Image 1 (cartoon, rainbow, N blue to C red):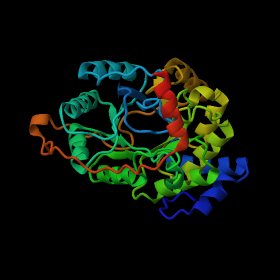
Image 2: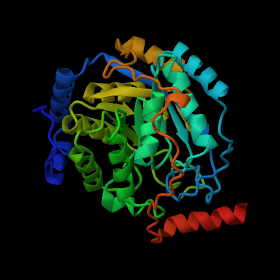
Image 3: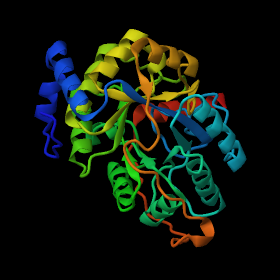
Image 4: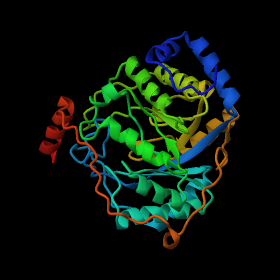
Length: 364
């Protein structure tokens, strides 16, 4: 059973997730081998091009300005700095650079123009370019596409129900609307979530229902294990058990058969054996480098040793989709519109977020 379905129910997904582990692994590995080369894993590099100072209240995020997490913020990087980092990543075996900015949403202006130049620069290095910049309008997504963007990341984070227990400054529909805006371009969609935030298994299944219902399904789905950072509302959450990660990866592989499943945050807490089980279960992408935006990540040399041990090969760029053409700024058909979209602010109160905010004020 590996056809793409858009009508998965929560009950069906829970049945898969809760199967005896060996049965679950067998089916996931079978689906994986039918749709992908099991010995090829994409290596991506995640680069924080603008760190800290975010106005959102995401309970997991050390970049939220309202929490005190000792994160050293920085202004938007220059194009030359990003190019140097991209060349270093390419030399280390990465085929994709993912650029993240701690923004609520994209705003037209000099900083967004600078990001567009970064996209053009990296695409010309023959590397896939991904961005995660918050909510985007259709016109902004079109401008990114013209610059040569390969993928846009916008995670659903969790189920719609549990999302309200983690974030109060934006709505779930904003996530879906942004993905819909990206889908109106030739840019691929990267969307997944985080486990270990205090959610239950039903919430994990609910997130997969939301992702599988998208048509087309995301081309890539990151599965993150929460890295609990001191000062955030989720600082007391216990690390995710490796068995939960394996089950989540395997279930994602079955429900999203053609998608690249990304083994993302939390790998520093996993043994090589645990990561190998995730690869067997269907994960076929990792982030390399010593940091994922602001949280620790395994050293790239250690990852390459692991690849050699497991007989894995890094995926070449543009294996799944042809390289986008870069349109220079002066030839662009899409110009800044100075949009001011009304992205939602639900405004409900999350007690642990408010407590972390109050604690942050005292420390500051």
